[in-house]
Image 1: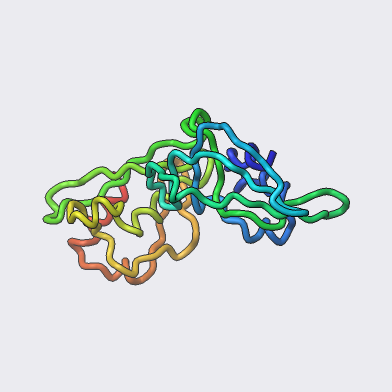
Image 2: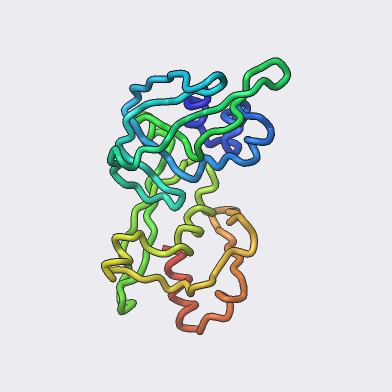
Length: 206
């Protein structure tokens, strides 16, 4: 039930958090990773008060929305511990992230295209990311832009960002009102040279 509930990010995964103890609910980070499987799962006891979920993970999406095919060596340990709270069993420990089957994934996650620059800043290069469509997409997009291009673009030298190192959001949200996003950066970004500021604005607005 917890795994199925965790497919919905509504209210910061509010339904899934009902399966957790209050303490673990505060610690659990569902956005850390998304593990995509084919839906065939086996749950077996792994201790007196613990269960292990066994499934074949075929792909993952990290906290920055980068989609990657998965190998068996990268499969997570999906073990869960339980305690009783008010006479009901609750999950007291488990892995960060959520598990979702491949058929449900495109119904919950939406493709978003970020843009970074060619090394000479003469054009933009698309960088596709995946984020839950019912979560704070604008905030996650800006945070992903701050983190820079995907590894395969940055390590090859194919893409760079105009956003300077050390740039950060002043608050952990990017509110959108009437289709206009308000992005409040720290002084590191505000002090950027005029030409660089123009490039940053284009990167955010594209």
